[in-house]
Length: 220
Image (cartoon, rainbow, N blue to C red; front, side, top):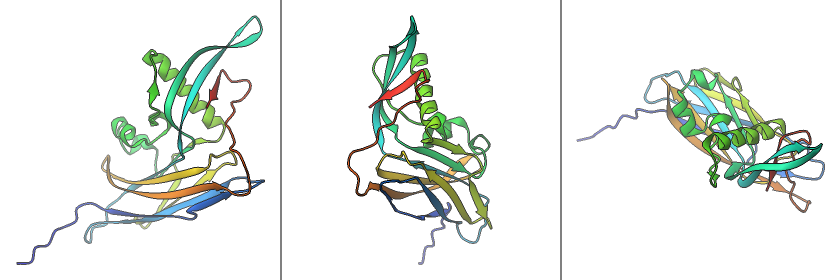
């Protein structure tokens, strides 16, 4: 007897405009187009929201706090993070809070508040959270962490596209573009595309510096 198995969940077919980005002297950044289709099961035409998360290579970082004593800036407390993404951008068809609850957003890292930084060392949770916010704020001001709650366009309920800018100060290495289809408050499909950012004709590696007026700065 012939047995037919019905597919119950949609399938995502993601694409990227560039799978390799070359960083040359005078590099001013790059615009990535992330696009694709949501293939619904059978003949159904479900309504799906789309979230795209682009992450750069993870790196260990130590955040130090500076305090002013007698007119001189001095190191105060510090906190270590084992796997901070060098770049993190989220684009969605609607604000994340309208799509999923906070638990789901945290599981899939759907926003800068939910980045899994893997803190290490002995430090009070409240202090650790404060340093984490300082790290996220520092990288947002550097153009390395971004959120666009209306950054995904969906047409005909099937095709989607999002544009994410990579600034000139991005770290080279492997990048991962994760796409999520969301319906009814849950992630019903996901897919991953790979992007490689490589230096061409240059030596060395750029380092991230904090704004000189900031209370926080990073030490790699």
